[in-house]
Image 1 (cartoon, one colour):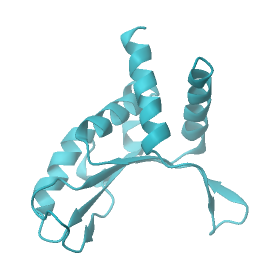
Image 2 (image 1 turned 90 degrees about the horizontal axis):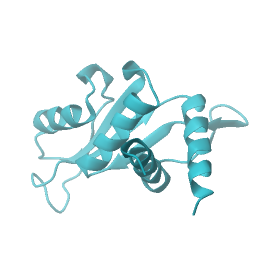
Image 3 (image 1 turned 120 degrees about the vertical axis):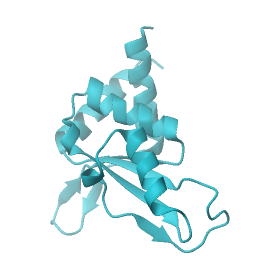
Image 4 (image 1 turned 180 degrees about the vertical axis):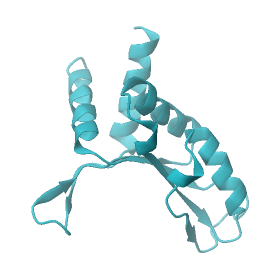
Length: 137
């Protein structure tokens, strides 16, 4: 297995396990929302998936968005900077940070980060790649 195929397999497994699935969009009748999203607290997972989108699937960097969830009392500015660096996206592509009530470990974690790309063509391409990979297991 080459490094490129290993990276593809890992990215697809990340999306399969941690990503959102197609879902009905109640705002648009009989429409499917096919946003590609992966949410996690592990920076390695976010980095691998963001790099795969950008480097392998050639998703234009401007289409890659992020969103952060933190707890009240966490250092929002510092945590946003941390995740933007991991995902390699500019601040302008960060959706509004969600601040939850104080959790079990305020100030001791780096929140939960979501990497997001809108577009059914990317979703369909990932679905097809995943189905092809699953043929061999």
